[in-house]
Length: 83
Image (tube, rainbow, N blue to C red):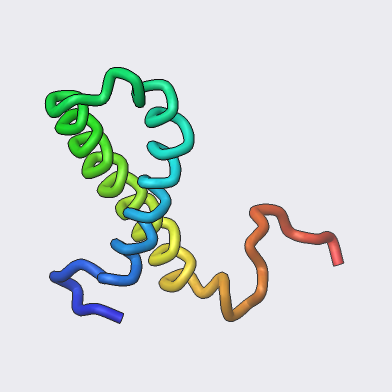
């Protein structure tokens, strides 16, 4: 767990891994023959942007679940049963 003002290193590592997988599986095979310094810089920028987007998505989603108590209730659905 981290304080309210810093980055969570585990969440950041997970987001970076997921971003690298996306770029490695989707973009890198198509760009491999043209890979040079400028394309590598573009791919690094894309990796950073994608990592930050995934980190933000995870932070919002998981913090919402934690703050709203979904995990403790065991319910992740948006509908209620009629029981």
